Image (tube, rainbow, N blue to C red; front, side, top):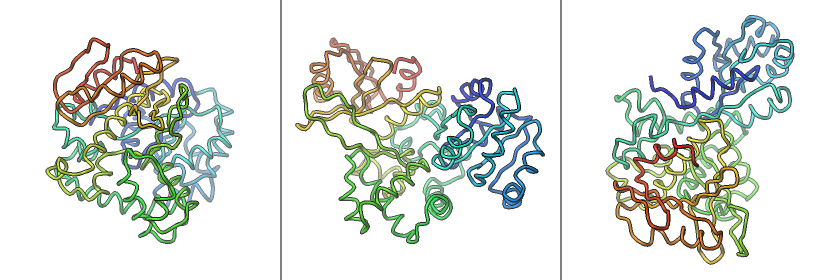
Length: 388
């Protein structure tokens, strides 16, 4: 079993809160993590129709069977449980009594905010980071194509293409129906694929609506579904303008590059180097590594991009306390002066120094202006230094 970085944070949360909610994409390893950390706790998977019926029809009786607490998996399937858990948690002084997990962020957070606010600690668990899967030792194209879902790293017999094909079908037919009564699932799948073609691009909902054949309100609603179920996320622009007119639209990225590659129709790792989306997927991968590093340690992402109306841009702005670090992401393997153009401009208008350039090559560098050039294979080591 692959050891997860978030294990330490899960133990800390369980020592400080009456309950802990572990949320993240379907098949990201939530159940494996919580059952390995709490092997003595009773376990109930509410995807099981018999258990779900019991919990729905008699929530008090269902919870009474777990007087010593339990792991309640996919708890968003039985929302009524949250109200009954409130009394149980209020009457106990035991921390970490219930571990709640689920793959629907919106439903879980909505129910917790209504019934369990202040009683529950959150852990967001995404698919494996490069360090967790030891993908930092693997060809970067293979890393992008395979993605980070644990099943693909625990069993070499699982074919990547078939895995993601079935993942997409399962997601659309099960998770989407839980969140939204979408009648035309074929159109919704087309929408997801169109989103994949916009990785790293500014979100233009009008264009998406036009290409999908729906109105802008529907696009906004469907984006909400994809965000809540951890398929994609929006990277927000940094809000300080430094006397410049700045872009205010977010950028669109996916929570897993393997899933995104499958949606783009990339059928094999050999096709990735010649794909026009290769650079976008590389950028997506690097941003995900930053996000996973922070979430695994219980921190907010605090990640942005910056672009002004004349085209000057920083791919990623990492904010910790009051320190802002500019990060440029380059999919090329040869360092050129063009790699530093964005950071140099950013440092000039902000008065900052240093920065990071993440690229596909193998040779780390430290430039005279303080900018570090980091091979993507060494990114995990840099992130573990806890400076970003």
